[in-house]
Image 1 (cartoon, rainbow, N blue to C red):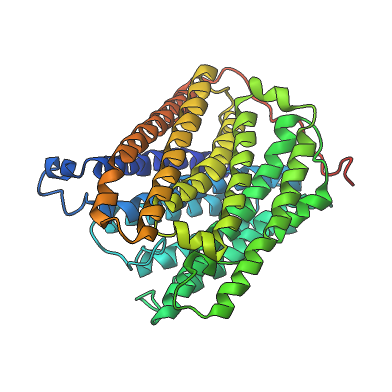
Image 2: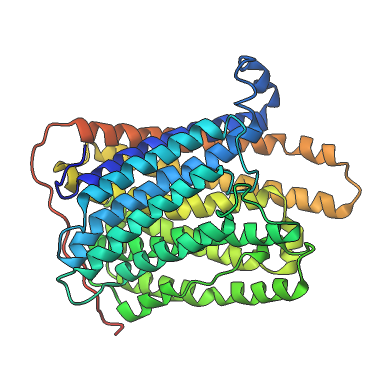
Length: 464
C-alpha cells in the first residue's frame, strides 16, 4: 500500500489517469447525444434522470477530465521525471503514494457530489468546499515532493522543466485558493467581483497549471523523443513568463473598462512566450520531422504543439473586443476549449504515457497498431468536432447580430452540426477505448524485457 519502490507512485498515477479518462469521456458522449437528440433524456430510467441531465453531467465531465485524467497524468509524469533530472531519489515515494490515495478520494467525491447537485455553481469551480480543501492538500503534497527533491539534487544544473514544475505548482495553489475563495464555504464573492475572479481562475487554471507545467513536460519530451539536445535552454526559459489574464473572457461585461483594456494588452503579450516556445520547438525538430511517420509518441507531441500554437492564436484573437462580441456565448468557444484541453495538453499527455509507462512496467506497449488507431481516431475525430463547432458558432453569431432571426430558429438550424459533432465525438471516444485497451494489455502482460529510457536530454544547443 505504501511501497518505497522507485517509480511505483508514478505508475499508480498513470493507472488512475487512464481510468479517469474513460469516465468523463463517457459523460461527454452522453452530453453529445443530448445536444443532438434531446428526447434521448426520456429513455433514461426516471429514477436516474435527475442525476444524468445535462446541467449535472457537464460539471462532472469537466472536473473529472481536468483533475482526473490530465492532472493525474501530469503528476505521474512529474514523479517520473524528477529523479532523472535531479539524479537523486524522489524525496518521498510514500508521500507520493499518500498523494495518490487522497487525489483519488477527491475524484470519487466529485463523481458522487456533482451529479447529485451538490455544487458551488461557479464554472470550473463547481466542487464543494471540503473537496476544494482536499484538492489544495493534494497540490501541497505534490509541491513538497517536487521542491524537496530539487533541493536534494545531485545534478548542479536545473533543467528548464524543473523550473516550470516548481513555478506552476506553486502559482496554481494561489490561483485555486483565490478563485474558489477557499476560506469561505460558499466559495463565492459578491456581485460582479465574483464574475471577474471566477474567470481569472478559469483562465489561469490553464495558464499556471496546464500551460506552465505542460510546457515543462513538452520540453522534457522533445529532446527524449528526437534524441537531440534542446535548441536553446535560454529561449525555453521564456515559457516561464506566461501571461496572467482572465477578464478577456468577459469583455463587454459590467467590469471596469480599464480592466478589460489591461487584460487585452496582456493577452497580446502572450505572443512572446508563444513564439519563443514555437521557435525552440521547430529548431529542435530540424532533421527529425520524418521521424514522426513511425514514432507515434513524437507524432502526438508534434500534433499537440501545432494545436497549442493554434490555441494561442485563437486566444489572442478572442481577446479583441470586436471578435469577442461576435463569437462569445456561441459554440465557437466550446470548440476552442476542446482544442486547448484535448488537442494541446491531452495529446502531450498521451505522449507522456507512451514514453514513460513502458519504462515503469518494464515491457513495451502491447500493440503499435493500436497506438496508430488511437492517434488517427482521436485526431480526425477532434478535427471534425472542432471545425463543426466553429462553423456552428459563426452561424449563431451571425444570426444573433442580425437581430431578426428568432432564437429558436437558430437552435433548430444547428441540429445537423450537432449530429456531425456527435460523429466526431464518437470517433474520439473510440480512440480513447483503444488507448485504454492497449494500456491495460500492456499492464497485464508478462514482463519480457527491461525497457530503457531514451537518451538523456541535453539542455543546451546551437541557439545558445
